[in-house]
Image (cartoon, rainbow over all chains, first blue to last red; front, side, top):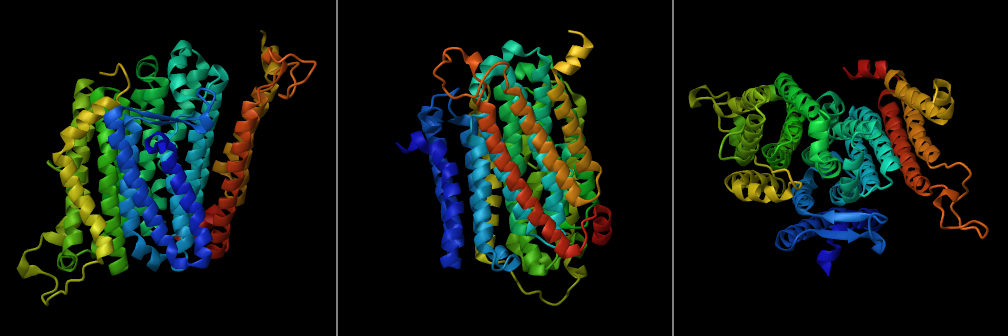
Length: 495
Length: 124
């Protein structure tokens, strides 16, 4: 029974937790964290169960209130959405496990509200992934965006202004998306994604549908932070509390990317957006401009969280490039990078948060060789994640870039291949800046001759970082299993 | 269809386009954050009006079953779905404005100004 209702249970579980936390929080303040952590654990296990179930028996469709689509709202738990739900919920579980001490330190006496909003954020993300209805997707986009404005706004002194900018830009994006689905609805009379996939080819030469496609790509592009629309991202991630940025940075833009993949490949159809209209080329060009732009600006940053934020702009470009290539290898690269980057960015932002907590700053120029004595395990995890970002085999990050490169070769777009190779070098530059400061000094020129005491971060913060870093190695080695599974996610007729 | 009919026949859409433009102008050009927020609400209202005006049919009535009007012909009733969708969108808009005002209060507490240029100056 449970698997039939699984698509509805996961978002509703988070919604229920977000309502119950403030109610219980009035009575006992300390219950907020355990409830949030237990909910995250439960949904991570449920999504694992659902993932295995979908592999074994095929997709699950859930009809809300028993109304059969296209009239009713449908929740779809297929190969692609079950995979992304699994990734999002496990990363969220680790970040929530990590966030107990940072939240206590950075947001004292606000835990109840914080965890309630975190649960609301995850409601929005899970709903965005699972829903099979265009308007429902808009509602979940707004739920997750409102929650992320709040989570960013509670940061340092500059955070409310960053969050306000994000709010204005994010609302423009969501409104463009809403206008786009309005065009589609008035042309086709349906909002169900599967239904539209069959109807839209009949009217693909209508200018209304073309405008709708462009509005939707722009709207979701803002949520995803593709290059010219990334303006909100660096400030938001820099000034947010470190637990918020560790939660939003790895999964927020990924869910936007997923929505883009879902709409382009499974609503408009491959042929429409890649051959009849050159939207896919535009996405690829802007994404590769974003890869170079983000990497170069990341090199110029002095602060670690800001550097990671610009690196996010670059990395989301890889996913955009994979979408824009619109061939099987590009699709594999995009989906694989969605997984890998979620893990890498979560690890890196959690390391940055830990260093801010211990040292009170994350200024890259103040990093020195004492860090490898003080935080040996944290720095080891950072090194693994950084090398994975650069793309060193056998770490996970190598394989997504590998498939993207294969995709560019298949399209014979040599410019994009050059962009991937150059950006790997740029990635190496901005990560090795830190690694060089921490590791590359011979013992006789150490800055502090006297013994530095080991001052490792607490276990509850260290454990998620180390587990995710080990996960990067495991995923890299086992990537062929995942790639085989991604073949099943592709829309029909893509191969 | 000549040009005059094209313009006069779509007058509600022209109105919506003007509203969208005013909203975008307010959000991007105005320096005061409250004015930006007003621009945002105008923008959202324009999208809502777009849906509502598209649901209208000539000589149709509200979608409630009437005894002297046959149910078989959908042309007798206007489309109720856009209204239902826009009720949700209005709720979303209200929530967005609420969060935005909360942020504005925080900004004002921290910096004692809501002018974008002054804020950027103070943040350096």
